[in-house]
Image (cartoon, rainbow, N blue to C red; front, top):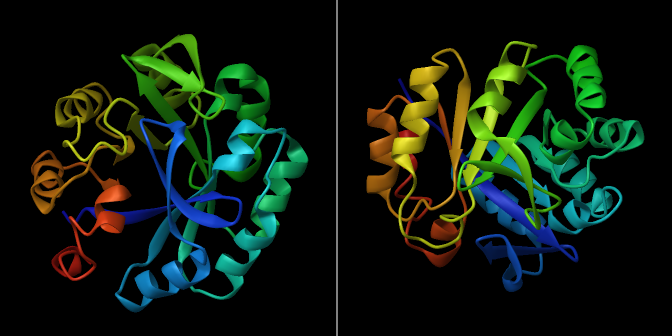
Length: 240
């Protein structure tokens, strides 16, 4: 089974950035032109992108919508989008911009009924559950807030209600370039063998990707390792 390689494009003020452990104080700008970054990835054979509106994650709705529209209209990448999807208007705007899927995390905790309405309306292929964890508890609001929801009951509840795709980020690993939490993903797949699980957080080398491949994890999001050059687009060719 081939693992799906999904680079992350995190946006603040229309720029491509990375954070460390979700800390907005520790942001590093990698490009003033995210569209160029996306095109470069597309040219290298990447087919899917995970775009996060970090401004939106902290505010009342999507902030970088114009940029999202450009990414969708000026590349042929399959884009899944998260950050700031809090209302019906937000989710409609995201899909109208051309994204293939949206990732929803905070609202699945704050307003489960609204999340389930979206799931029923758009289907389990278009709505991805964002399960971002800090010590097994789900974090929300751009990871600035911890909830009392524990990961496994949270997943079990939504997987019985129609969720099929989950992006699980270990916040303690994210942006640290110290390796990914393979044991957590292994545990999730053992408990829920049918879930389309995308691992996120901590990928530092090709060896980390290979560890996930060994565990038959369906997808992986790569962020800082790609921007820092620990992994190159060339390194990813065998996986594409």
